[in-house]
Image (cartoon, rainbow, N blue to C red; front, side, top):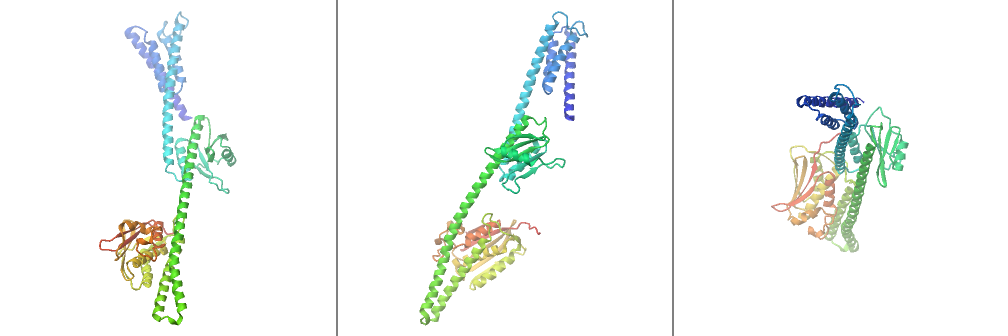
Length: 496
């Protein structure tokens, strides 16, 4: 109301000022040149100025009328006296009024067209910006939050957005601009708008469905709906709601596609895992069965040395089976959908020491060297899984470099990451095969081990490290041997 009053006073001052200035200018020219030829032109100029600087048609029409009156009062005989009855005056002033009125209407229409064009351009740019912001949204809630922020900048009313997320117990998730003086819209009206998919004006509120035909995702409610929020405003709100619905539809389609791809990948991994397990379990079980059957059938006819050799083979295969079971248990600790693990702050040095202790029990003839920095490194992790990664990699090194080979484990820090490197003094592998070390589909002949491949070992290690936010990689060393290393983020830990 106060703002409208200020605009009214400004337009009134412009109108009166333009008439006054043009009247003084016309008087000046009459005194200098002694004629009244420029009087009509001066007042038409006043009409042009007023129509250009004020809002609407009223002030231009008023200026046209005041110009005719001023011309009669100041520039027709008798001067400074109103007289519209002298012969020829009426047609002259009527033509002058029509010309002024026409110029006023043309200028006002031109101004309205210009303002409308600028307003359309502004809205178009604003909507394009909204679409660009939608492009970074990954779910429906982010789309709704983006729409809410956009409406807050462009519409000065209380706003509610109801989003249907398919929860029957809580059918709508409400996002709103907080205002304690406002009461929440009637849910029954929201539901009616949602079901019918039509704009509804009720109880001083505008209800607009978020709809991309034929799907309806929610409802936008504008509080304090009044005459200032015009039909054009409703159309703009419908357009925003439609763009919001399209953005939600795209995010849902993207989520569905992502879910389908993840499901296909999980199915592929599951099939590969089953093939790998079948291969890696069959070989040691066959060896154990064969060795045990040989001992039973031979009875007392087998020498102690032969029995010892077969029992040793059984022990080795049983150890391998035990490792496979531990790997399988580790797999179950990783969430298949999110690849997330439960983490807690752990001292990495202690994890390495525990892993080495178990490795020395398994490989008494192996030579394991550990290098630890003076700085204590703490990282959020699942200690069982990280310990399994270290054991798997070192066991892999012993298996392919020799059980009496030398393996070095080094812990270091690089930027905000802990780096654990494991090196052996074997022959290494072909450079183009390193990337396939961590592929569950890799063939056994990469390593030259005809008996069994890596099984779940290194592929599992890669999944565990990835779930911790790190990477697992490998490289051949210049002096011979293979170096495998993985990283763990040293992010700040929040204690509860």
